[in-house]
Amino acid sequence: MALPVAFFAFFFAYPVAAIVGRGLRTAAGAWQLGRLAQVLSDPATLHVLWFTVWQAAASTACTLALALPCAYVFARFDFPGKQVLRAVVTVPFVLPTVVVGSAFLALLGRGGLLDEWVGLRLDTSVWAILLAHVFINYAVVVRTVGGLWSQLDPRQEEAARMLGASRFAAWRRVTLPALAPSVGAAALIVFLFTFTSFGVIQVLGGPRFATLEVEIYRQTAALLDLPTAAVLTLIQFAAVTALLAVHARTMRKRQSALSMVPAAESARPPRGRAQWALLASVLAVTGTLILVPLAVLTARSFDGPGGYGLANYRALGAVSGTATFTVPPVDAIGNSLAYAGVATLLALAIGVLAAAALTARTGNDGGSSGAVDRLVRGFDSMLMLPLGTSAVTVGFGFLVALDEPPLDLRSSWMIVPIAQALVGVPFVIRTMLPVLRAIDARLREAAAVLGASPLRAWREVDLPMVSRALLVAAGFAFAVSLGEFGATVFIARPDAPTLPVAVARFLGRAGEVNYGQAMAMSTVLMFVCAATLLALERIRTHPSGEF
Image 1: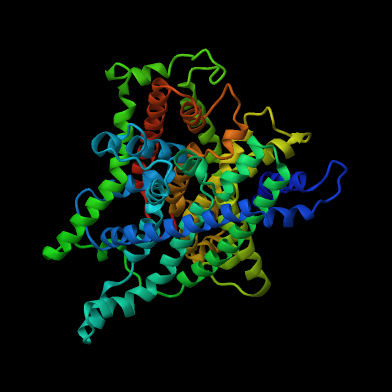
Image 2: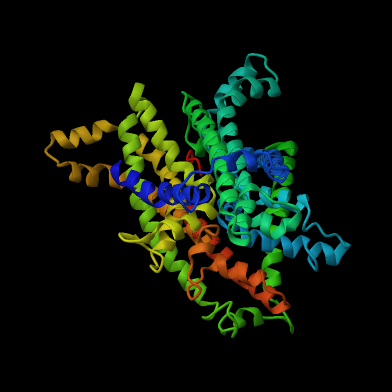
């Protein structure tokens, strides 16, 4: 547990505390706590806070309404192409939010598909924001709820129907109580991600809309008002901590005893008109919501100044001659792959150690008591904090805090993968925990009795069982590292931009050529993420993980 705690203390808690302290202290070192009340009573702050909560609640409700039928279909129906579609549904979740914004601009913005066909524009409206949030978080509900749903024993519901309950009554009294904690956990995760939304609001919201995260960025990077940014960071940190505490409580309820079966035994081919109609309607909604934006993005990437072709892709290999790119933009692909590879190794090392510590402290049955239980829960929640904390604050905190020996990383290339690993670690932990907890401790004890050292017992017993889960965790960490934007935009060097940073720079410049190159780079990133996820689906073995 010591190494994960030290990693988070140095590279998460310290930079965040440094940027908050820098904002709330005067040049003489005195605290200016009066700034707290001043910012909190500002009508502009209250407006931002209200919009942040409102759009997160609306996005969560819309996501649940559209994704729960899909979770049921994936859990209970067996149909051709299910594995591929499951991977495709997950692609938006790991795409950088600036790429999602690009896709919806191509669909809903000026000159977009809807604008050309029916004269309808939704960019700079709240509808575009809600649709983009549903697009991103659809997979959270499908994977979190669907994973558990696919393992619930359907014979329990069948037994209730044999005792006279209607189909709806059997579902409401048997299945719904078992699923409720999982649905609650998925809703909290979606609310958390949309509460801290940044890239989507920046690209699609325009100047009218701002979440706390966007306002923190504006106060930090545009207005240089660090005191206000520090107060807003504290507000967001408090909200995220409360959400994670509720999420941890919900997950403990989810771990209550349930009658489970292998997922393959609960899925059947659709039977009857009603089931085929349900499958068709879900596939239609999923296709419209997920595939259309991705298809439009791909089509726009081939739409150059001289018509459809590879002009936008060829332009990525040339230096623009401006200060925006001092190297060919195509170099961003190599930079992203290299950074994401190192970040994946870091996330795996820290995440596996943390998951092993959580498993050892709670035992394979997930149970512990008293002070140890509270310590483990606190450690578990702490590891999730980077998912909800302002990435803008973390990135700027890196520049402020890690600028003198022994941690002077401002000019080091390692600063980018370290920041990306902070986001990847929670995914590694959530992927590894169910598998580690499923290993029977008696196997290790038997190996020890036979004379095996702890290292050899781990190599001979644990490693063969967790090797596929390790690959899945590595794939998720790689994908989310590839798409990290909020922190990287602060710390990436001008001569070594990543793909999301390059896309944002292109979108920030006027001109059809720049827009086309942004679409081309977004498409490249989308296909890299899709290929990674398709590979993960082929090796995925434990469907009850949280992601």
